[in-house]
Length: 266
Image 1: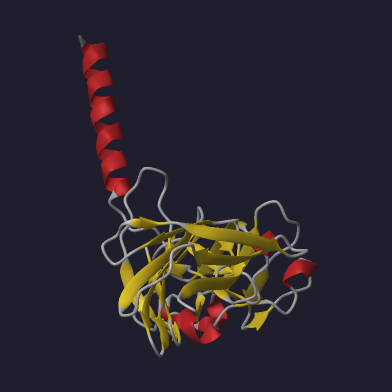
Image 2: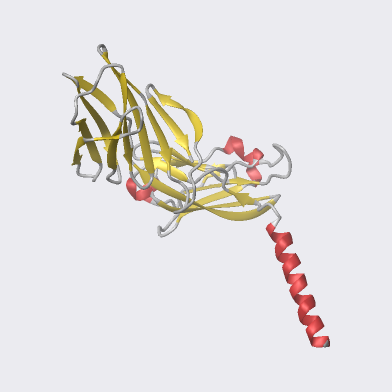
């Protein structure tokens, strides 16, 4: 009986300890959704830590190290108010940086410039500060995606996207969501990135809207195009598939990045 009491007591203490630990905010975490980089563009990998107080963490007392799983050397290291890049992996030379001015507020995020397909992988952010120390992992996925441009010739509507990776699927629908027949052509360059050209097989009608959807495992673009006698008016909206399989997508409007293209985040 005494042994049973000890076992039960131990289990209760363990459960309470796990519950208390799980309720604590980690010293280092990654805010927001996982990152999807667009080939050739910049991407930010989020890393935040708990400073002693609002803006109270002295930058010269904070050390930040970013590493990439499977690669030797560091992606970026900051210590004693300066970048320490003696052991930086050559792949990231002149492409990685943090923002020392944001360290007092607990922001140790990494900016990775001119993203390449081979940059995809698991990154680790380690922070040491007077208020504590800790590590968090951040997964970067890399795709190539670009908005569609439309051309209208004798009521034949063609859409073209210059850059997609991985190879996407293409579909069309009318203003009521009914599927339409279309041709699809893919041209890949030496880097394996695809140019997509697709044309509706039926003649379009003026003042109707036709939607072209291009999608792969990482990115989906939705491009409604309204056809008039004066031409085509269209915009492209992007969503990123950041959730594990079988998990629902949640779309949040972010901001227009350039004329005719809008980016949304799951």
